Image (cartoon, rainbow, N blue to C red):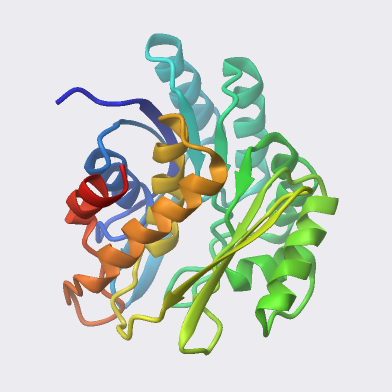
Length: 270
């Protein structure tokens, strides 16, 4: 089986393998594409929390992006953890050089255990510069609250926050609704022309480490293969839900999901 597309992942490393660039690589590979990487930080963590974060020099991040893309041109780019304004500036500079059109931004700000992964200057730069350069931004509810300075308690609040992100320059927004306390989970896709609400029954489990990283990488993979953004979000949500449903139960805290659930997607949704 040959890879369907080539994906460049710009994100931090998770030593436990459940989130970050490890989850991204697993997702892209499981869905049949080829993964390349630019590592922005090394996090020392496990399912119980983040112990420490080691930053990668912004010049080295840019070098990874540009040198890799010069040899193997990516069909799409997934961006995850960008923890400082210097890192974001270096990534924007490199994106201008390699000029890839399909870019998915997962604005990683808070780890599953609650650790803050980004500083205030970086948040401002992300809001004012980076979201205008990408095809889609995929915040969860706490991230959407930070980006829009609003409180989100209902799916109507999610739509309002998405509209604020559109007014800031985002082309498309996919807000993940897992943090709302309800029997059903509502994920919302919004652009200037449409609003699409994806409804799924909540899966009761604490093993959801890496769901955001996995979802954005799955969206990137489907999008890189020619699916529309809306369809890519729908397929990626099905893949993540199936991965959660496996309930691996690794570790003593928020355990990882099962990235090897892609055969379900291949059979039923291709």
